[in-house]
Structure formats: structure tokens, C-alpha cells
Amino acid sequence: MSEAQGGDPAEFAGRMLRTMNEAALALMVSVGHRTGLFDVMAAMPAATSAEIASRASLDERYVREWLAVMTTGRIVEHDGAAGSYSLPAGHAACLTRAAGMDNLAAGMQYIGLMALVEDQIVDCFRHGGGVPYSAFPRFQAVMAEDSGAVRDATLIDVTLPLVPGMTDRLREGIEVADVGCGSGHAVNLMAEAFPRSRFAGFDFSGAGIAAARQEARLKGLANARFEERDAAGLGEAGRFDFITTFDAVHDQARPDLVLAAIADALRPGGVYLCVDTAASSKLAENLDHPLGPFLYTVSCMHCMTVSLADGGMGLGTMWGEQTARAMLAEAGFTSVEAAHLDGDFVNSYIIATKT
Image (cartoon, rainbow, N blue to C red; front, side, top):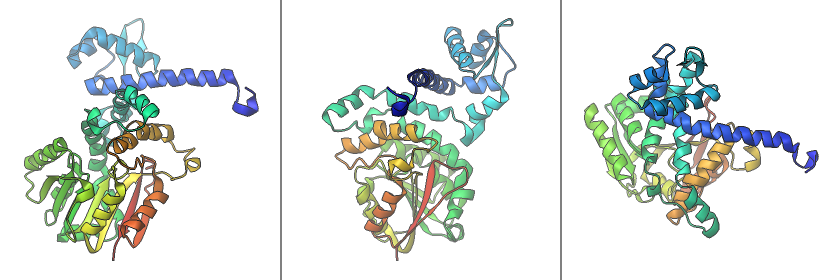
């Protein structure tokens, strides 16, 4: 292979070795998050593996091997003479639950989730079809944790004000729905913040709806309700003033029908806020996307395949703003505008209205 055709082979081989190391490290960062090891270490001075394991109530031998990964991965610092390990404060700021939406360790859980279905995805490459949502047993919980931190930090004070006048309308009292609500956290946050408005959450996941109702009960919310329902068949004509979706359109079997159902469910003058992946519909325009390889992988190994498994369109995670605009217009929306937040390269905030 000449340099003009694909660069230096030795340099590329080095890159592949780094990729192998980083992929392995991602899995173990997920383990550190799930076991609470990062949280424990952030609250401790330099300590031995036995001391860390004891504080975390975990098996020392496994903790010691995990610490070896974290040390060689330059995430944890190790004093060989003292046999101690420490998590630098700058690293803890990106890896602990205390970091909130800045906790990158939580997102590493998606790597393990996708690895679970690799054999099935390979079979789909050969025979078509898809891998059903049921093959991802922890997806609902991981998604709820990941998005929950973001909603806690931004939904009320940052995201909703992107829709002109919406915060005032919510304070006065309107009818609101969240379609594909998952575990319902966004609905419950809005219901708590705007007690004069009435909120409905719809999702096809029984487990998600159960979790949403439980949270609403714990918060004592009388203005939030949840129903297990297919988003493509809401059957709520002219019912709502404001409808939201949060990363819930692109993995639907029939996103076209979902968008049409949302348009039908809005009253005249109603507003739809679609928060979804920030990307272009053209691959060539996504080459410098900070999460391009990751998001296309999530698409192939989850969002696209769960749609195809249900006989759907397989729109994919990176459907992009151009496709979103075209589909919203086809669904009956007369005005479509997109907003973006500085520093947020993951989400686009599309505001659509109908007359």
C-alpha cells in the first residue's frame, strides 16, 4: 500500500493497537462505574488494593486486576514502592457520579451493551433483518441513567427556554406530552417544575412506564400520567399544546408515522420539540464529528437494528438534520427551526409548529 493510497502501514498498525487498548479500557471504565470504584477512590487518599476493595465491598483480586488496567491506561496513579493507588481529582471530575452530566464513565456502558449482540449483528449482515429491543436487557436502565443526568442539569433552565415563550405557557398551564418517554424522568421533572400544566408520557416499554409511575408517586405528582402505547398510534387528535421527544424518533420502526401522529396530536398552533442526534444526513459532512465512529456504531448495533427487527425503516442514529426537516414537513409541520447549544455536539433541538 503506497502512502498516497492509505498512509504508512506501520503508523496505521500503531493506531489499531491503540484502538484495541482504548476499546478494552472503555469496557473496564464501565466496570469501574457500575461497581462504584471511581466514586470510592475519589473519596479516598492513596490506598492499597485491599483498602479500596474493602471500602467498596468488592473482591480484592478483581479490584487489583482492574487497578492494573486503570494504571496502564493512565487513569489511576500507582506508587509501586508503597503499593498504593489514587484517582487524580481531574480524572474524578469526568468519571464519578458526583460529576453529574460530565460523568463520561456512565456512557462507557454502551460499549458492553453493544458487545452482547455482536453475534446477532454479524448474522444480520449475512441474512438481513434486525436484533429486537428485547436483546438489550439493560438498555432502558443505562439510557435512563445517561439521559437523566443531562435532563437534571439542563431541561428546565436551558432546553425548554429554547422554545420561544414556552416557559411562560408552562407556568400558566397547558397540556403536554412526551412521546417515547422511557422511564419518564423528563416528564416528572417538567410536572414538578410546572404544577399548573398537565403532562402525559407514552412509551411501548412496560418496564419504563412502571419506573415512570413509581417516580411520579415518590414525587407526589398529580399532574403526570403515563401510558404504555405505540408512538406510531397515539390516537390523541388535537389534544396537546406542546409535545417533546428526547432521542426517541430515529430508532422507531416507523418514524414517519410517529411524526405524523405527533402532528395530529397537537392543537392548532401547537409546538413540537424534537431533541435528537446532532449530525448531517450526509456522511461526508460528519467526518469531523467528535463522536462519529461511536454514534454510527450505536446506530448499526442498536438504533438501526431494533427498527429493522420490527420491520421498520432502519433510519439510524445519524439520520441528520436534513432528513429530520424533510420528514417533519411531510408530517404536516409548517415551520421547522433548529437550535444548537454551545458545547453540545450531541444534540440538535428542532422546534416544529403547525398552523
